[in-house]
Length: 361
Image (cartoon, rainbow, N blue to C red):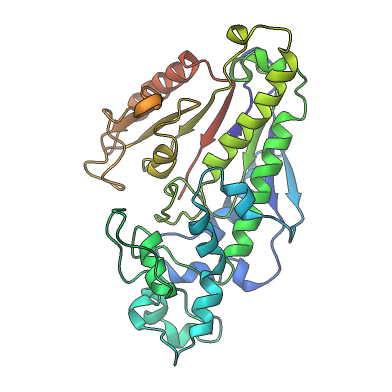
């Protein structure tokens, strides 16, 4: 969800919901690829969210369903936040995996375990089994490199043994990128040069835009993906917002001396149950993006190694990372205090825009 304003000044709240038309094939529905994983069902989640919004909030939401484009350049877009080699791997992995064939090296340990368990039932739907890593590489030490073998490269880039590569993935990621671009466009459609000098977070002048993508992204960092996340949509959204805000601020303050120009900062508030460790990693040294995450204590819950309160950023980004870990079973009263704390920190950082990373992954 991308927030470019609120109704703090009494402006009627409206939500622009941006999604994309899905091909009428089982592979893009919750009936096929979702069946391979008992923990994560992104296609079903997307369908349920859109259905609930239309049914429960018809007067509040305006749904914009985009027509899929074939010319979405994932490398050009996501190179703002990801290593190009990782993006290229994701783009080409399925083709390489499918080309290996059963006689060419489909090792059972790299087939998704749910497919192996149900392969007799799934063989008509999935002639090529979904692929998951069968190993992981050392931490980046300058010695290891991605293998030419697609299974080896998967272990190099993926952080776990459960995030699947499936045949519709690239098409879905292209749709997600299209949604993010459109969401930013909708958020800025009423902005004029000069508006950015008053914080959109406080002004209440602009709509809330909810980008309903198929895949989440907050566990993907610059050169790793995992946790059912491939490309980081919240990170891309923040960078696109920053670019748009910068152009508006530059236009509106040409006559102002440089020290009077508003800093073009954007905040990301991550409210998923798990810490948005990928997003936090991408911007850990970046003072231009304030990242606040409210999540379950990583001492007891995934991602375990990130999300601690003393992780506050590094180098020029010290103070721009703000983790609020909560104990399992925290009540709404505790959570409400955490949200107030996060929003106060965001406002104190003097940001021009806000991205809410909803998660639901």
